[in-house]
Amino acid sequence: MQEEKSNFFKDVKKSIVNFDKYEDFAISKTGNSIKYILILMFIFSVIIYALFLYKFSVSDEEGLNFFKNNILNLNYDQEEISIEGIDSVIVQNKNNTIIPVWIFILYLTSALVDAAILAILGIIISRVARVKIPYKANFNMAVHALTLSIILEAIYILVHSFTGFEIRYFNFMYTAISYIYMIVAILMIKTDLINKQLELIKLQEEQQKVREQMQNENEKENQEKPKKKEKKNDDKQNDNDEEEGNIGTSEV
Image (cartoon, rainbow, N blue to C red; front, side, top):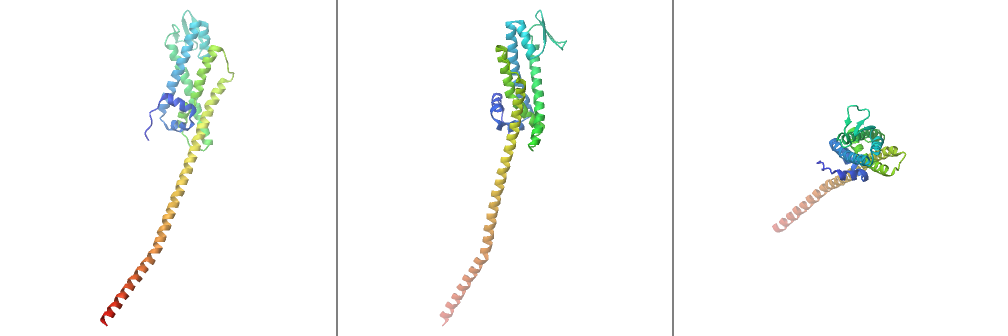
């Protein structure tokens, strides 16, 4: 079957609102899922970096606090930024490319780890549900199951940065949403498989009925053949008798 060309924004919408498409995600190439999470986390990282620059434009302290709360601890001294725990990484100023790259690597790694863990959960759920779904397919679905959680996290960071509004158990909600998506997707696949099996059973029953009907017609036809043959022979005999009678009359 030829694979449809994927569109990132359509895939985002499908990942959030269309559970039926998770079966398609499951059988797609893992490369497509990696590409999808790369683009999603790139957009996410751009948002985080833009907020970081904005906070620094307001004040250095706000920029550092934002970075510490959302990414890593920094040290800042006379326009020089160093990332704690990584002695070799020294950023000469806040506009240095190492910061957006580092943000992207951190969040991408986190998302891939989440997807890997979610895929393991998917294997457990699929076994409980008695559906055979390999790890690769579970990983593909897990990547898309994280979509809404990642988008909500970006929105939450935006809102929190500007208003200070805080959701105490947001991390739990982030995890719970992705788990719910994964569970529902697997159950939908199971339901779809059951429906396909029922359709196959119905089709087999219809085929059996057709075969029985054809068999009955053949048996009926075979039963009628001797009768037709006997009748034909009788008609032929009658014709012969009539012909003999006519010959005898003409001789007299």
